[in-house]
Image (tube, rainbow, N blue to C red):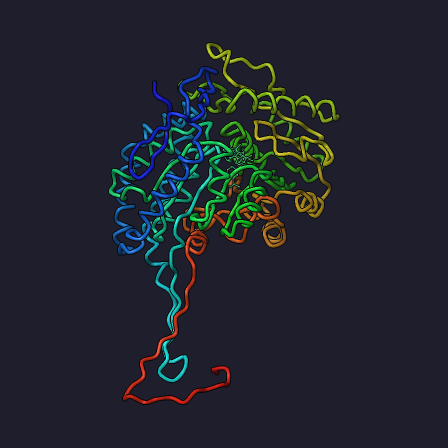
Length: 497
Ligand code: NAD
């Protein structure tokens, strides 16, 4: 089987001197293919293809660009099964979850088809004598996107549909751990009629990323991934004069109030903590029980719910939670469970040692539940990115909120309550970017924007939605006068007022 390569200038490309990296099926632990790690020259070829495609694409009527994106959306829907199969095979998430991710991605393409409306600009007549003024939003040029493994279909679709709808051309660098879905989807964009070079895909690692961060032709960088890399991307691309948005990691808390509907809260927590094996930047990894009574009742209900959780391969019907992405990540998550025990947290449900019959070499870890977790423990401080839920106890809503505000991350949070006043106080004051009230995963829909606070986002603008239109365009303000009747004005030395 030939290695997974790149899409450059509308053609699948391979580079004989590229380094190769194995791609695994996490449910079996078997190597299913190899991905090329692009050399600098390959990335430069993709940037050159994007730069060459830019002038004509920028000039294309925005409504026509939007129509091509509409056709792309139709093709994504028609090929959903193939895309989801690739996601499950390389990421491991179960088919329903893959379908949900793709649907969210498709909604971002749908939003991009409305972008001509948001590019209309602002106009003022007679800002001075016979002077009219307007602001318009021009594309930046070549834009790069660097994406994580955990949403191999959706996160790329957060980026390039909006970027190209605004008239930019794009180079995408997907995660090298599950590269096939992004490459397949990009070929559908081509089939939809999006011209060669408008969307390019290079597979690779740090070398490819660093080339994108330093090449002068790249005007802006969108990044989604872990916080240390997001910080590096932000610093490096900014130092190279680029506009940057870099979304990082998370530790999302759910506050459970004494008046909450506990059964609903438990169901919601199960999905939000263990869905996608906890490998979501919006996953709930901490439940803050307000009052010991709530804490005890919550733990008493979560334990049996975890015993019913069906862990298995996405290829088998009925699986609710798949494997972790890789052997090293499995070891890392398991190491956190060991650390939690050593640090004195109460291990209520232990997911270590789980085996899935017929998949003994897969990276399966069972859902894990800790109680009596305290803020200095590593299982509380760090993003584990696995199926591990920590229950922390607080005496009041204020104490729960102080805990959340003190955490370095501020991506998502939610509160379970029946008390409107408490919910309003929470949504008003909590220092987190995306907040749910009885909604465990408050992931904004495509026509809002997605972004955390604190060390979950470096940059000023969030991903997708209206912020994307501002991120992928540059404002230009024009003032215009057409002197009439051959009148000559004298030179004026005062500042025009
Ligand atoms: P990661 O940071 O390891 O990788 C993300 C991308 O950066 C990949 O394309 C990778 O090739 C590249 N990369 C990795 N190391 C690099 C380096 N040293 N220099 C340059 N580039 C490098 O993230 P991941 O493990 O693929 O994804 C999981 C992380 O992403 C989690 O922390 C999760 O919270 C975060 N995430 C955040 C959001 C969000 O919207 N905030 C969404 C999804 C995932």
